[in-house]
Length: 282
Image (spheres, rainbow, N blue to C red):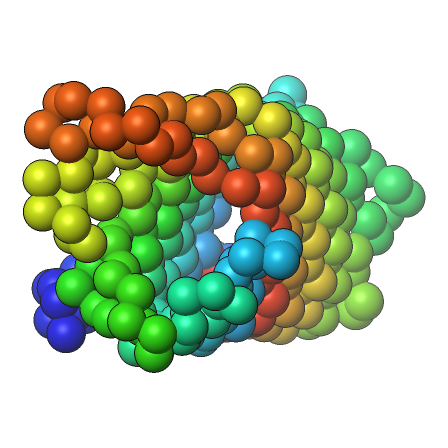
């Protein structure tokens, strides 16, 4: 499978890096006690999800994705919170269209990186609420190139790039000395997007088509259950991620730089991903 072994290698290296990061401090969760110095927290682990991408009335792709994630968070004495997180996942999806048939075993992978800044608010002695704002980048590659559908249609590779502004709130509540529950809700303001369609994979000589995407939004949420211990805190976190992106601009399709009288665009589309993370916090 195209580039599959390199993706397995990359995932293994990333997982080893985040899991072998040194834990120099105890992992006791400090909710609302005054901070006299900056504390730094780490999270890492694997995730598993099911994703469905749909262009209504045209086509859909769906399948299982697996990957890893990591995060670092600095909590300042002034209750300001600065953090960054990243994830990488890949899997195989199935393509199905009313007009061009179906294709199995398409390799997809997603890379996402985000930075956030927030502020810790105390709600009583047992709950911490952290509103935040940030900047995120999401990259998805869909490797349909070189495949032929059940109706004889030729596929091509596609790449999507999203730049967005996450606005959200996180909560963490103590259930007792060892158990905590957290909630996250986030609205993602879509800033800019680019869709690249490598049409030359289907017909040699056709140039890559690049369409700009300007309108859309995202939503995501999760529930995190945390078990605290002396050195590490362990957690499981079911999640859902959703994107709704409007139709792109229209560009001329070209052959070796010359327009051929055909236009191309990225239709309205929706992407829904739900799954779970299992991780360690220290």
